[in-house]
Image (cartoon, rainbow, N blue to C red; front, side, top):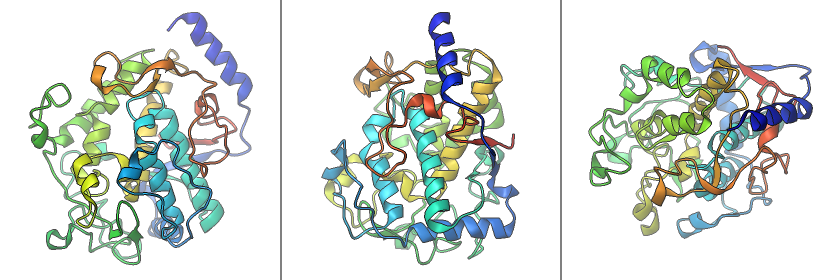
Length: 361
């Protein structure tokens, strides 16, 4: 990216964003008090009891082969459907980081506006658990404040039986089911033949998100947004590794009663937003981007990415092929992510007066 374009981005964003009246400080889940954890879980379950939002529309439509929008669902399910529908638009394109930043922010606003949540958005710093994900303290069994077990009940489709989401929490897509997790240390062994995407199928997933591995990603790729995104998002990278090591809904594995089309497409990142851990995971992914943005002045406004997912030429277009995206490009919203007409420039700086949040470290 030329210096002229980089400076143009800086000028654009500095004029577009003003000062916040207050800035929310997002915190790691384990720094929450027991009451704060309970409040967040209660708000999430409130979303799962609110009725379907009729404003939801499928703008891409590929997921419709697996599941059409159903009114027999919840407002929480609507958010999962947005992610399912937009899957080919928001992964392996230049929208990956800005869309998920917008998505997590919008979801948090829904918790606050529709379910009375007064806390901050949590993130899961999985680097803290990389040495032993299965036995990490984050998988608390507490029925009010716990996120539940990392490995569900194998004889019950791996549905979780502990924690706050083990009861009174049913998911609509791709078919009605309880929350599922299936911890898997080497999730890519089944894809050994796809060497272009999975060159190390025996890789232990946790090795990709150790503190050393993540520090290297943040320290490198100065001014190189495409390189940074590729390091985070590629098929055996830390973003995918966390999805797949937890498995179940977060890994995009189909519930037992799903239709044949679902199983033909698995694993898929589509309905991963079924999993409450999705929001903590993607807040952490956003934090990585935030840390990288703030690690070097050349990173803050750096951007390069296409609008078309092009996996056939992944080595050339790991984050999308033309048409190229710009700060004026509008983020997709499927009718329920507000405000409409939100642009990449609007979400580029978290402390700007559109988003108004930062991270505790």
